[in-house]
Image 1 (cartoon, rainbow, N blue to C red):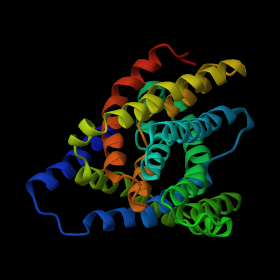
Image 2 (image 1 turned 135 degrees about the horizontal axis):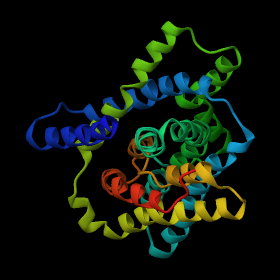
Image 3 (image 1 turned 90 degrees about the horizontal axis):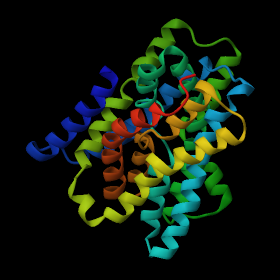
Image 4 (image 1 turned 60 degrees about the vertical axis):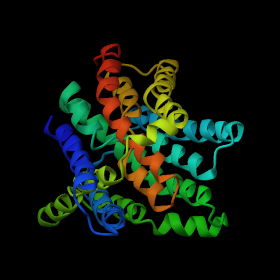
Length: 301
């Protein structure tokens, strides 16, 4: 449970520093740069070579994809009907389309279902979230930020996104037998900076006041992320005959709080940063209640 406590501590530290101290100008941009360009690629490089694909484990990956593309369809439709800005729509798609499958998913599923649950959580995270974030996530960020929609430019952004390059390198390294122990230790240490720095950055920007004048988008976003998306994933699993722990982990990973890295990408592309960070902070708090409750009526495996 110390990993879950770390989420709260880092978020609270960031909020406390913003309120009571005077952090240097540009600190948020600097922290976000490190997270996206150093810590996240290092984490991908560390974990991807250890993942062993298994065709029986398609469901946890499919649940992640359903959550993202469902969010894109839902918020694009709602945005047109409600007159939302492109920045608001993009923030909702990114922040509520991606789940925090590692920094919350790993410790929560290990606590709820032991090492077997943790192993399935890694599959959903590494084969579902990271490849999707590095490809479709970058696409959404560029399109809704109002940048050129030229397909070659979008392809270039995807192919030069550090986490995507790390994904390709990690697959190659895994095929060659993995990293030497010393280098794996370095990657582990670098990747370990992602959670504290990313959540500290979120805390620096998190303001509960944002809930008051953005209650509608917050309710729609977290209603999808914490309730409707996992319900649809459960229906998909039941319809395809998926059961046991595979079904449970797939649904619970889809139900996790919004992904920290996705919120940072929204910030970096100026996609309604206030809404993005409000969704992230409130989603983290609420998911600590909704995920265990959801787990009560799912099969224990």
